[in-house]
Image (cartoon, rainbow, N blue to C red; front, side, top):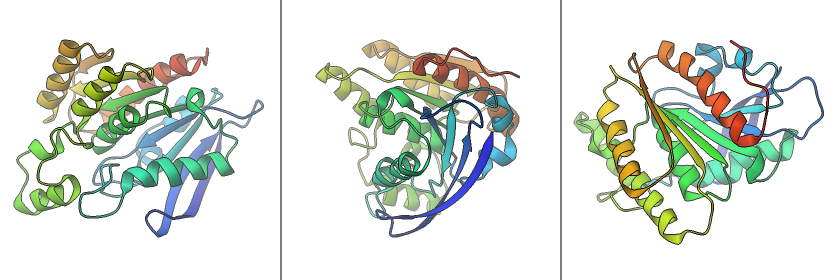
Length: 254
């Protein structure tokens, strides 16, 4: 794989931002893109630093783009930057302008961990016309419902507002809205969480509600906590899931 470290200007955020990308060094593009999102306390370098992601995709005709999501939960903040628009317009726009990337839904998938798991589901359900599949590892499904210290509660209110339930921040509300419309195809969805993870209850609740209202998805639990050993193992399954959705026949090697 070729490895690219890019810096570019985000018109939405009005600042320079960063992105890592892995590019196939064999075959003829354009290639589909897997947008891989980081968690709250990390940045765009972390997946490459803490996992073997480059090794897992080395034989695949697949670009992996890892943009910086800052601390914005990949949603348009109630009092702050429009991180959702930044992802959809600037990060995706840059990747498709500069990299040998397929520029339509059939060539886009998205996934992430924790904050990035929430972000992947939110972006895919808010724009099903853009992403064919989405995966979430240890997703922070309802971030406003956690028992945070006061300083983080203030940050969550700035991001999600005073009443996030039922809003464009709410994954369940987006899924219900998409199901009611019945026009656009649902992105293929896969969720997983470690049984020792503090977010397991939120993931079980989302899985149960998806089942209740008939949202097609895969859900699995595995031993492990909110940690990189867990995510390094699970990203392999996410890659295989996205490859199937994208029509890529080769599975990632271990």
